[in-house]
Length: 141
Image (cartoon, rainbow, N blue to C red; front, side, top):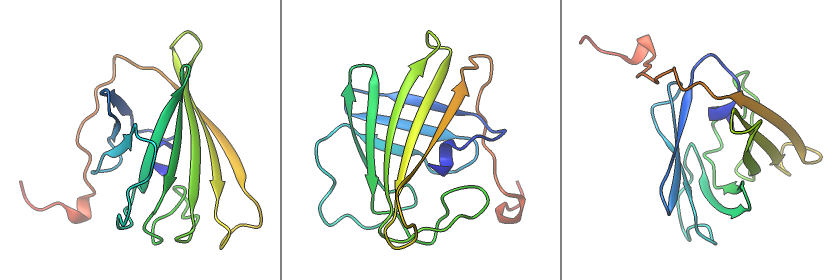
C-alpha cells in the first residue's frame, strides 16, 4: 500500500484484460495485480507482494500476500512481518474525478488487530509521470 500512499509524486494505473499495473514516479518497479482467482504457488516474497484481484461491479477488490518482510507499510517506516496480508477496494468516485483506495492491513505477528485506512487521489490528466531516481544510487549520465 505504500506505493499509493499520498505524497507529492504521481502514479498511473494501466489495465489489460488480465493485469492491472500501477506505475509510480516514487518507485522503480511497477505493481502488478493479476486478475486471477488464486495466489501463485511457491512464489518467492517480493517488494510489492503477490496481488490477485477480481471485479465487484465497478470496484477492484485486491488481495495481496507474500511481501518481503524488510519493507515498510508507510513512508515513516512502519514495519511488518512475513505474515502481512493486505486487502484493498479500489474504485472511481466523484464521477471518475477521484480514485478511492480502502486498505485493510492484517499482520498477526506485528499488530493486535487488523486496521484500515482510506486514501483518495484526485485525477490529474495534465500531469505526466517521469523517472525519479535517488541521487545516492545514480551514476553519471
